[in-house]
Image 1 (tube, rainbow, N blue to C red):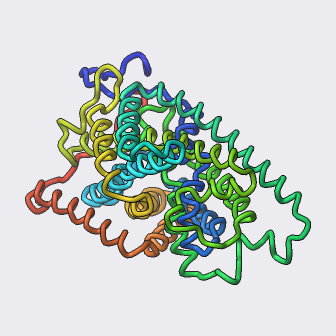
Image 2: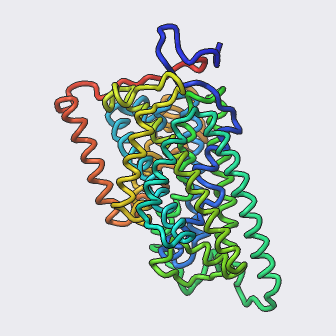
Image 3: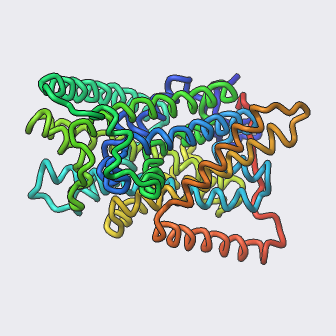
Length: 454
């Protein structure tokens, strides 16, 4: 019976199915964060001329199409490898490998930038403590907590989600109180966050959208838990779409409220990480500033933990299918049934990277890999559910096609530096694959999709 043993008949240790639908939703919400746009608010605002809510909504359209594709592909392939497996099985193993390599950068950078922002936000509370002390502490904490069983991590996620939601409600209350006390708003005041003719520019909007995608990064990580969730063919699709929709709506309300208070004026470059707390201070003073600062800190702790867990499972999927050394990356700890080696490696990389890269740079570079994976998953869904389907429907044609096109367009509007550095990462991955297969003369990977009842 499922759940009685994590091993199959041959004695191979496998991941344990311990997560329900609400566990997945809580994990996804905390990875993305109920206060998702607050940490990146200042960066998007400066890039898009203050039109943060517009970029959030445009990005949500692309992410909803992509979320549907992720959920449907998880029905066909309930595997920890996620987009890596989907593209490899439906299009070509080598393209699956490249997709996995791009995702790997995305997943490794997420806990890295969480380590950076957590360290910087904690310095706002304890300014006399060096940044290095916090960087080491957070990287170690993320790793140690993720070395516990997955059900333990799920319980921690639920507590974090509830706490952050309460703080969001408090922030809204202060904004409403401030707006209630204002007697004159002027023409277009409430529509200005969507369109301000003084700062609106399509190039800046699309560039801002390419950064705003970071608000949603994490919903795709839900599919990496396919081997640890009950009834994955149903629950992965539901959780992925619901998390993306909840995130988009809540994020739009949050940044809309903030823009009503702050307007379109730029934030100082050295304070973009603290931009949302600065808005909070304007409506709630010193107390609300520190409440928001602390909440963004807690949110990024949750995101760092969750994304490190997702990165470890992606590495496990790639290692198990022999895309990267199987002995190290494809190993499962027999006690807690987690890919322990990968958790430790990702933690080490986050610690080193925290001293080499800034939050802004990491955020944009992270989206490079994520958007490549999103395009790949949409194309894979198009191939499986339309091109190869015995019965072709318009929905299975238009949904993944629009998802792929919109994600590709957003990717094209990334900054040049992000595309150059991301291109170097992809080139390194292709070179590794070429050496491994002696010029691609042999199969690069062998994909394994386990049964639902393991």
